[in-house]
Image (cartoon, rainbow, N blue to C red; front, side, top):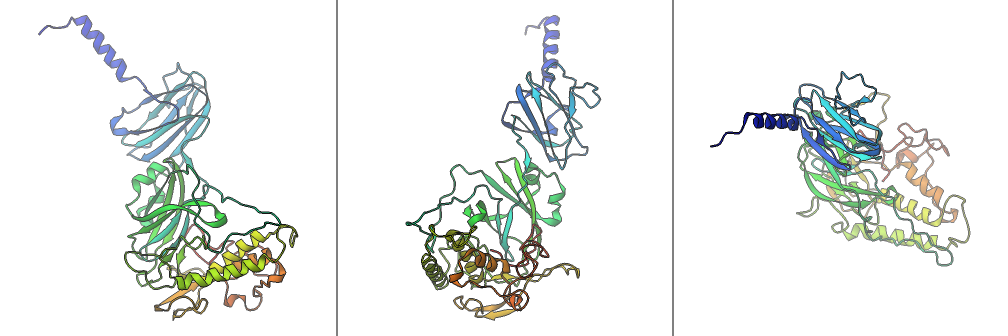
Length: 466
């Protein structure tokens, strides 16, 4: 074996030493994942050129120490450290595991990490657009049973409005067809964990939530148009534990985090199944007092709901639309704010909310005297007094009343000759509607209710607005 000259060995060793310290090159619009276990204690990354460079960092899991990230847009300054006094070195502040820096980098720059330890993190750079984001819009809980939950992403696309004009003014049919989702929708992933696991106390980043969540059974996942709420991704989740608090997040396009929201599964004795994915009642997504569906189904949708339940509702909707079209819609105005289309939409929402009573339970935790209580009916069984077309059930259940605002919205949206009237909140409205939650309960006063909404992100449902 021939030995290399000593001078050549020295050159090779010097080259290897320089190569070991070479920064990792990052490209525009790419997502990079790193683990502290496979990096040096203070790794450096080379940033590309960009007129307006956005560097975003997301912590996926933490180690024994808290990492620091520094960036410079000086392509000649490789000493990017916490102790650097240079005016072109900037620290990226991390809040809940997420941070970003934006600035010009016409000749590129460097990103450095310190105190990485065993921390895993993601880095992305882009030219003018933020990559890692915490989205302002929250996911939505449809409802839960003792083992299942209906969860929706935040709306990602508006409903398409089709306006007709006189004399060919038409309205949607009573039995709406399921529309096709928008082309090229975002990708969504749902992550759930028991609230006791501390999912909301870890890094509030997409990769952090993903690494800390628990595995759940996704029984179905599709896109659904919730009426005027817009298009959302819809999950039917199974395999949950009864009487358990859960925390949920939705991740959009791998890096955008939406949440957290919270919900509680019902008690083991809760027997109402979920009803969802009804084109003619697009916002109905909650538990309804019905017999348990035939196996293998665990919930009802438009393909499994008995016709004895859906046919009367569709007939009511058809008759109402026929009466509404006796008005010269599109030619004459009965309101400067409302149209025949908005009237039909409001009536559909009201009809669905009263035709499908929403099963509920009293809150698990005792509320303080100042906390509002849900508009619950007394326990009942057998035939439902609100909808005689629902089959008799042998179990006992309670329902949460429809919000009075659902009726008031139809009253405001429709012409007077249809005779849409709601009970007076001062007298008998509370016997059939939830009063004072969204609106104050005073006749003609909008807003100023005790909760301002029918439900919140913490899993509380006070009245049924679906």
